[in-house]
Image 1: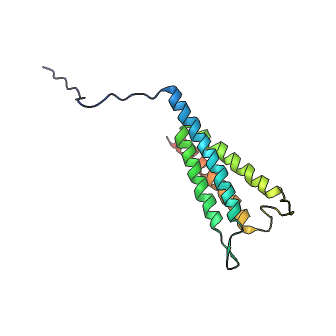
Image 2: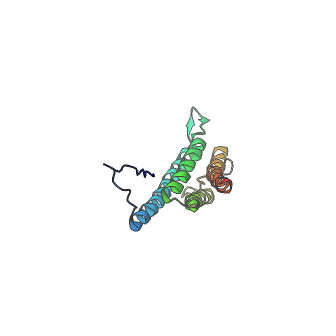
Image 3: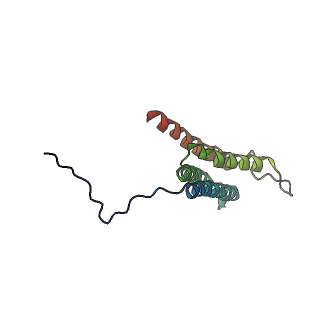
Length: 144
């Protein structure tokens, strides 16, 4: 004698698959939001670079660059569900920093000068945040 046991589905609606158009829209929107966040945090980091308290430079922009870029990388990958999504925010942030390092203002000043150690460390830490996240994605893929 065999007894078949079927799971009860009383009160449970069957799981619906998301529509492909809606899924694509959310993925594109996630990438666009991550790019906008990259621009906003990049500009904020550049503005906070010369921040001083009592004449002493404050390295808050270094922490902001590391934390914000890691969060943007996480958001981009998780909203698009694609590993390559870490690339566009990383490239945009890098282009912004290169542009800020090589362009002079009307007064002849650089936004990021070569003798400003905080700005140089900010660029290093910000880029490393993206690089470390991408590297961890690669390691996670090979271990699976």
